[in-house]
Image (cartoon, rainbow, N blue to C red; front, side, top):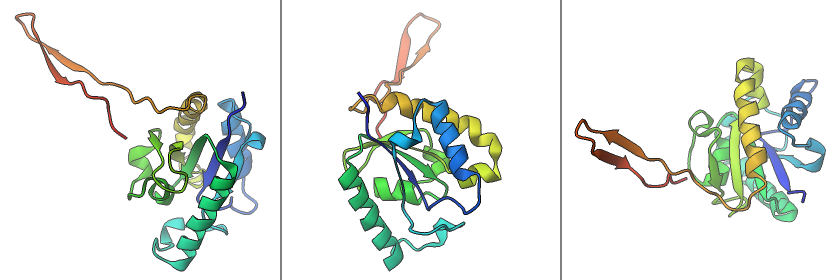
Length: 179
């Protein structure tokens, strides 16, 4: 069964850049065909610095409304965010978040597409600055491809146990991680 995956960029790819080709190759490496995904963006026109668009501006609010409408129409089962400035993470979570801190993490959207699982990774613009991050993006996309096959978000359970010399153990943390 083919799952509906949406790929969201901050803005359309830079004109005359390698971004779209790189995006297609990275997705294909993970087994995701770009042609079978909805490719969309938050901002209507290319901008090298999406973080400079004020969150409360009319432009940003119109862009958020338009993105919400596109995703409501498409009804994705999984969303991959290619984020550089954190505006996509903020749009989907409702909180300011840095892609450096949250890339590769799985969440359920609170806004834009409520209830839909999503994963954020580095944008093509970020890869132009630091191509070494490409391996990280490949890893994130492989995880996205696997997670896109399941409806529910299953968070890992972490258990840290300290073994004492007397043979007894001390459990420090056994709660599932929260998104």
